[in-house]
Length: 126
Image 1 (tube, rainbow, N blue to C red):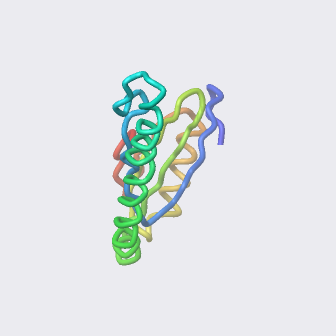
Image 2: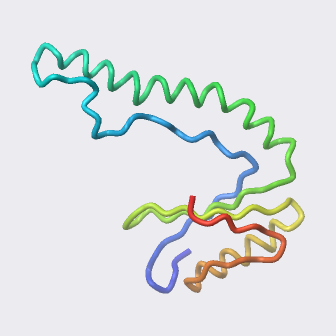
């Protein structure tokens, strides 16, 4: 849906809160001393700390998150805007209130407002 100021929002509904990706900062030099001989070590350190370790963490935390989501009555509604900068807004509601809350959130965003429907909790920007 598009808001009056031209922002395009996508709505996602999920019962599972995925574990966050926690890699190292991209501006980190990973121990590179500026020489050609140190480059392979720095590249290996960058891949290890930015990809391998965070991926292993997500793989370990994902099964318990999926089980919690299946057992829960809580439902997450995420509104995502990617341009000009990424913004994620989060509401939490229950299974029974989902259709009404989702309609109210969509109507609010299409009017350029942040809806706070009854029967839901607006957590704000994620």
